[in-house]
Length: 44
Image 1 (cartoon, rainbow, N blue to C red):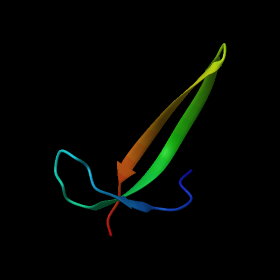
Image 2 (cartoon, helix red, strand yellow; image 1 turned 90 degrees about the horizontal axis):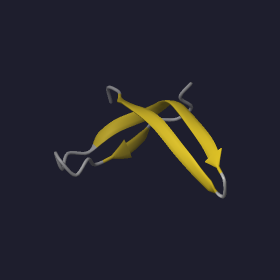
Image 3 (cartoon, rainbow, N blue to C red; image 1 turned 90 degrees about the vertical axis):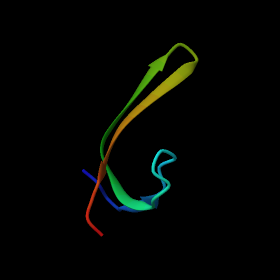
């Protein structure tokens, strides 16, 4: 569940937009951590 929206400027468009993170997952493999996240653009 998203808590707070944030502004981000994607490098491919160069246009600032508002996003939320709807889900994320962290996996530990040995000494390393892998973080995967799903972001969704939301209306301003």
